Image 1: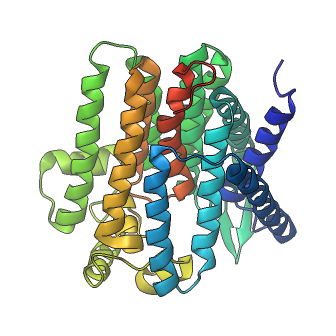
Image 2: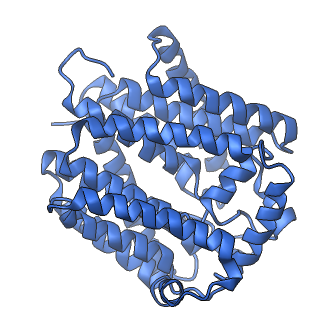
Length: 380
């Protein structure tokens, strides 16, 4: 039996509220959106009180504190909407407290239940109304995002969480199978080829991570994704390498302007150059619409540079190193798969800007995965 102790029930309720508020589009029911926004704040206050009462710092939290102080300072100086930083701080801090004080396997179980439910609900609504689940300001939107590209991170998180849990426990195989099939079919049918490539590769890695040489492949994959990012950002419209053109046009299903993304990237680079070191803080979507005529920079690295410039990117790299090093204290097939999945997420973020909730969810999965191997009473 599971979900029977008070702590497990609290964990599930907290994660459900957090995931619903940050991963679902609730604009079609404003009262429901307001309700979950309020519950999210109440949950944060409750958990933060618990956090302070049982206070101790891990290595990760020292760097996260520096991240929060820096991006918070820049946001309050330059951002047109201070609440954007406040709510992001609430979301990430709540997620951190969850990973720090609750059982790691219980966290995975809750994530699997909630994310799998999102996957199946989205698939059902898409079957009923493939053109859009509802309308916002006259434009079609979906339960997992304002357009079909926004479905990808939620579907990928469901696949990775299920597969990681299966690697650790060898349980919930059929749910993993169904979630993988439904997720891949959904993005292919909707025409989101970036998500289809990322999810398809991740499904392949479920088997591949057990094979000899998977750690070397992980390093190669990571380097490839980074190089691909830099190729896109610095060569853009002048790309003439046949292999790059093949990958973009035939594999990702994009034209060489990346559906107008090249224009956005060039304009973002110009804006970044005006505040290279500290960026502009966490800005609302209206700020992006004003500068780029779209709601995001459509690239993770550019988004981070816009938020906090070179300084924030440097702090984030330190956070990444701390998390990966902690996970690599116990290199298993499960950890290898998790990190391959994270690389797929990074590949998808060459074309899209996703919520930082997903980014920190994967970082915390890596850092706190060491709890799987600790003896009772030990802490990281």
